[in-house]
Length: 329
Ligand code: AVJ
Image 1 (cartoon, helix red, strand yellow):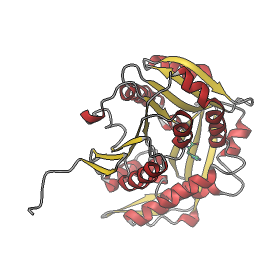
Image 2: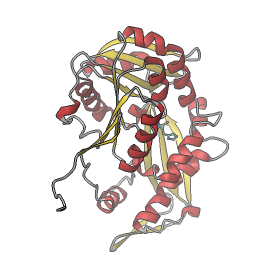
Image 3: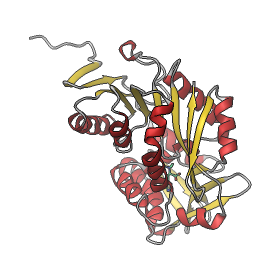
């Protein structure tokens, strides 16, 4: 039979799994990294943490005694899953942008038994693996896996246009967005939820510096290794030749800006290879690798309102470490 050249953009992989490929455009990593490292204030996008080693390190960070967000959010989801389900009148579709390994949603799939789950993930490999496993473990849930950049996801395939989705955005990933971009992103989530839909989102809370600083400087050094891994990633993918023995993890809470900042500081001059050219980063230079904004219940609710949501409820733990917000479109 003749080979077909028309792109196959959706595929039935198992009885309860459909895979939609929106072909997220490949980014020019060399161009992107060259530009951000050459800027007056050198930086790297936090996405560069997450190669295979980085994702494994993040997973270990979530189990350190210092890093409270993940376990606190999980305890909130466990405690309030039923209540949330009742508030939403038995939601039938969950959409999750940046679903990754689809681990957290299992709790909701167990508790809510919805008909549909729609993970959106840019990494095709990651999405395929996770959604296949999930389809086996939840035979009664139809999974529409969408390979897309979640900023692209608003142009959803027509076949997926069931309104009234519950968008699930856990982990305080929202804290990685700059205040200006955050509003636009929340509006995008509102579009994804659609008329009659809702948003269930985790937001880390402001608290005394000591607690925050400890969470990003764990005693085992896993956060330091996670931060440094961005450079190992660039060395491997682009041949940058960072001398990581002479780079140092720096993380601190910037109280005025209500954010954790992570940097990698050069302890010697670094001569970085970027394609054909070499860039020198002087000893003492800091590469800014991440911001993780912290909120109050009131400040985050106000942002939800500004993005066009109606807050329904917010749950926090007894120590006020983390918040889980439910809002309606
Ligand atoms: C995945 C963005 C929520 O900001 O706490 C953990 C990433 N960075 N330790 C966070 C992270 C350093 C994490 N988020």
